[in-house]
Each structure stands twice: as C-alpha cells, then as structure tokens.
Amino acid sequence: MKPSPRWRSVLGLAVIAIVIVVAWVALTPRPPVRRAPRYDDPNLLLLDDFSNVESGWDSYSDLEKTLNYDNGQYVIALDVLDKIVWATPQLDFTNVKFDVDTAYFAGPVNNEFGVMCRYTQQGEAHSFYFFVISSDGYYALGKVIQNKRTILDPADYALSAAIKLGETDINHLTATCDGSQMSLAINGAPVGAFQDTELTHGDVGLLAGTFDEAGVKIHFDNVEVRRP
Image (cartoon, rainbow, N blue to C red):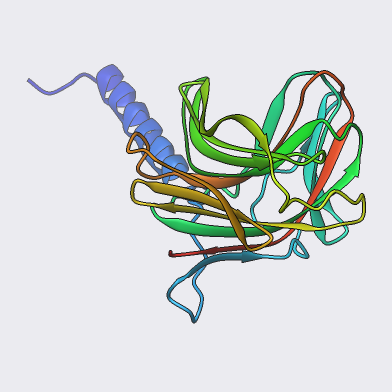
C-alpha cells in the first residue's frame, strides 16, 4: 500500500529535519584537543616563559584567587585561609623532569608553593604528586589521592638551607617524576625523594597555598618540562 499524501508530507518533513540535524552536527565546531607542543629536541615536552598569554595555562580570577599571566610571568594569588590552588596547561605526560623559577611577591611568608605532576581529576576528586617550598624556608613532598593529602618526605614540613629567603630572591625548583621515583631539588641541591606507584600519568602544574593567613602571591617563570 502506498502512503497517503498526508504521510508523504510527514515523511518528507522528517527527511528534511534529519538532513538539517546532520548538517548542523557536521558544521558545529568542536572544542580543540589540547596537545603537547612539538620541539626540535625530542626530550623537551613543554617550554614556557609566559610571554604568550594564549600558551594554554589557566586564566581565572575571582574574589578568592587569581590564576593568570602577568607581564611575562605567571601569578597565583590566594586571599583565603588554609587553601591550596593550582594551574595546569591541560596536557598529559608520564615521566617528567619539571623545572621552574619561583619568586615570593606578597603576603605571609608562612605559605607554600611549587609544582605538581601526574595530575588527574575525576568529578570533584583530584589526584597528583606535589613538591612545595615556603618563603620561610620549609619544604615537603607528597601526594594527593582523591583529595586526601599525604606528605611522604620528610615526615612533615622541614627546613632546608637550600631555600633562599630574601624577598627578591628566585628559587629554582626541579621536580622529577620518573616511574616510581619522585624527587625534588632546590636551586640545584637535592632535598627529598620518595617512591610511589599510585599515579602513572597526568598533567603538570603550578600551585600555591595559605595556612593561617591569607594574601599570598607567588610568581612563576621559565617552565621547562623534559623527559627525565
């Protein structure tokens, strides 16, 4: 039985609608996939002096925090108590050697700042390895697994003579995540290490935090991420 004229009209409209939907899906732009830059040096994974404000790092500011480019550097500022925030370039690596220059800019010296590797997120749960120092001379290495933070070396924050305490001094951090081996060097001096196999890959990042006083502001520059 042939379809009636009414059904032929309905079928015709349905076909037109499908064609329009298919065309819309095909033409709708999709968000780009963030890929690691390519360099002539095969061991170089990421190089950034923050002169390009579109190089891929987070750019965000509200009443509590600022994560943004700032005149050829990257700044993390935090105006709330007892909190840590971080910025990432939205990439994915396995083994890395992460170098960065850090500088205290303002706020309490009882702070913490540094780098992280193998960052992943599942919903509201965050996991990563962290390597931090403070402007009053302490350091710590550890991990965050599903938002639970554990210091793995030393047993708690410890003083290090390798940290420069002057307000205008730059502290160069080198964090290595190589297989199960994690380590931190400050201004070229090895200060701590631990072994862990819980995280195998993820993003790198810059982080800063407060304790009992708000207002910390840290500058970062000259990021270099290489294969170990």
